[in-house]
Each structure stands twice: as structure tokens, then as C-alpha cells.
Amino acid sequence: MHAKNAMPAVTEIYGHHVLHSPGTFEIEPPNHSEMIRRRSDLFDKGFPYLVAERDGTVVGYAHVGPYRVRPAYRYTIENSVYVRPDCVRQGLGRCLMGALLSECAIRDFHQVIAVIGDSGNLASIRLHEILGFRQVGTLQSVGFKFQRWLDTVLMQRELSDRAALGLIL
Image (cartoon, rainbow, N blue to C red; front, top):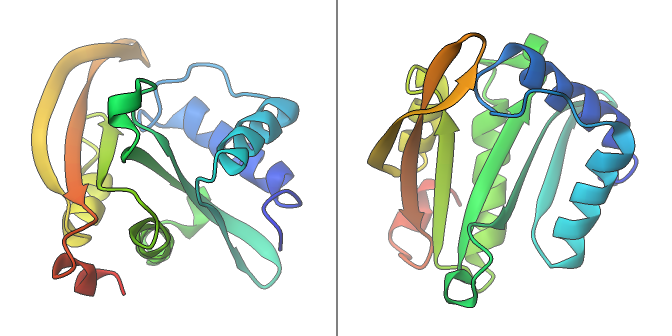
């Protein structure tokens, strides 16, 4: 399925995480047209945007985008991965992220940054660790959602380290 055709399901998946998870610091779910605009923006700039499906149903997606907009950061990207709530803990996030990192490794990207919402989001932290990310910091109480202060955990992985690529290829 082409990512563009998957956008209703992607919008639904992300909307669920906005409303029920501290994994994203958005408060209101973006609508379908906004999600299409975001995907198109990433796609037009050459960033990978992957969608996973099972039996013709979209079950998750992952993409990267710029880490920061200033030119010196152009080789550093930030990743995102979201899985349908009834499909978590089935290896989909790892599969999506592995494929995403493989796509990024064959391009000119050098570093991938994961900005993980909520230091209690152990599933996401562990997923990134398994894929070779290392924790580089925690920004404490930088987001307020669900009536509480939330941290962000910063994790980083070098893509140009060919020895580490064995983890994802």
C-alpha cells in the first residue's frame, strides 16, 4: 500500500497516541489533511516514510524528518514510530524502525535522534536501545500533558557506523 493511501489509518493511529499517550506532546490530534501535508513535506524533502500493514490493514508507521532546520544539522534526523494500539508488543515497532534505519543508512544521514516523550515510556526506550541507540540525556518536566509534567528522553544513534548496521540489516 502506498503511504498516501494509508493516510486515513495513519491519522487514526497517531490521533489515538495524541489522545492517550505521552509519547507525543501534541494535545489535539491533527486532522487528515494536516497529516497528508506533513507526510508530503517529509516525502518531498526525501525523508523515508514507511507504513506497515498486515492482511491489508495499516498497523503502524515510521518516518524521519529534520532534527533542526539550521543547515549544520542537515545530516542529523529525528525518528518517529507509532503502532496501532491493538498491535503493540508484537515486534512491529522494531520491524518498522529496523527498516527505517536501513533506509536512512543508505542515504547521507549521519545521526538519528530519538526524542521520547515521557521518561516512563520504557517500551520506546528499550526499542531504541535494542536498535543501537544510546541515551544521551533527559530533559526534565519540559511538557505538560494529562495533568502532569513530562520529561523527554534523548537517544542517539550513528548511522555511518557500519559495524552497528548489523543490528538492523
